[in-house]
Length: 453
Ligand SMILES: *Cc1c(COP(=O)(O)O)cnc(C)c1O
Image (cartoon, rainbow, N blue to C red):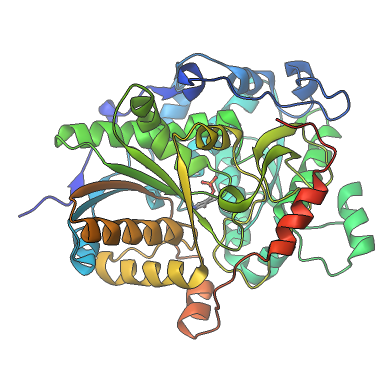
């Protein structure tokens, strides 16, 4: 029988996260204080995050120990298996071997608890009582709700209005894990009330929800804010995925030609790929590819610029690919990955040509996802479908070139709570959508006058 899974024993799980900042060929542009235009200091961030996480955010240590209580919680679902996708390979009929990390095995069903658990832990040991955050489709909110309960913290989640109404099941998961879930824009923050005055039926956006969550956290000395993607410490925690994959592939004597992930804010893509970026910096021949939606084409069409992480302009200015902090994704877009910015680390690596990006529309992504479900069984999250479309495209290229390729990718989560978007696809209600050029012009206008990286 041919092998399908490669397991690691709990005792083989990596004990440290990998920090790519230690290996970057050129330094990253620092986050700037919007008032002074100077690099932000750890003290500037102290009302928002606990100091132990701020230290990780700015750390240049290559390896950072995973605390014992975090390892213990990780073991509820980690190490995740590395799968060989033989059924999907057969369907593609191309000279490729496809391996994937199944991050759908976690209790909330995605990679997000890899960072939610350590974030809750570090806040707890810093003496914080409550975390405030935002969520789009609810994966992050549900992951943080679970993690907060594990470390006895309260949790408040601002959920993008359109998802709150259309995707009730993760809201129910959050309640089950004991968190409070509020539709955003809400009337409990200034940022929310301002949006509601201008647009009473606003569908909300991640940027708006972030503004609300930060305002809520900063107003309560016992509370801090928590972000599920984009920031350096989040990407750091996610490297557990790629470190495990590295070990698992080593066990079977395989090294990938291509490493792929879908990219919303960039955390799961960075998680699977940064340990391989390290190899690439040291001379390995490996391609590293991010997949994003044509409806929110941050890396492939956005400018690299200083921009805010949120709509209300409360975060530091981050040097990143961006569609503008006032970006509101088209409501017709069913596939997730709607954040306007891209993690500064992923943006920097793209500028350094260590990483590249490709965009796919929602017909391509759901077609790939349905093909996957029909050959591999597991139903992918709509976000995950982007990387599956990228894998299929890469396989077709290998076929045309007559080249054998080993592909590793991160299967970021399952789609069992997103079946409504599958229903929309299967009943022909989805159409391909490309962000119009006017939207790029709007993005450029929204950052005009900001410092240039
Ligand atoms: C949140 C999420 C993503 C996108 O977020 P990143 O920070 O880019 O990883 C992708 N897939 C799933 C399943 C998610 O829950």
